[in-house]
Length: 137
Image 1 (cartoon, rainbow, N blue to C red):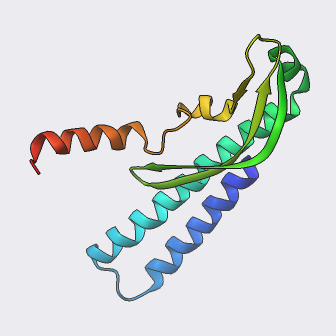
Image 2 (image 1 turned 60 degrees about the vertical axis):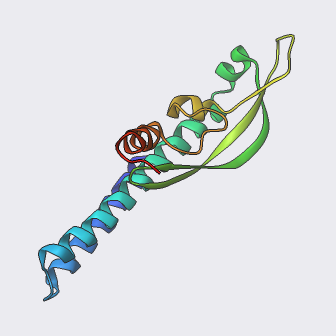
């Protein structure tokens, strides 16, 4: 995980240096450039974090056995729209055994606080509700 963080920060550092070496450094250019670059870096860091947590769960076989989790599918894509952009990451799909009902889970989605059919972050949903209160059709 630290390698990924260092790689993303190093790339962002290089982009920032190159940006300020250019002649056209107006306030508008700075806002547009950095909003895009920083949001992209945060999304990549978050995706890397969730993928690392997924790998930890996959590699911890004793914990998985205790919880009754059996790998069903690997590298399932997940995308959720957040205020800073589209967050995409890969995760593992597990079958939960040892119960009367067959249940399937994505442990990383629980860590992320994302429901099974959720496509928008809670902050976007809240913003939509606030906006709908302020404006009519």
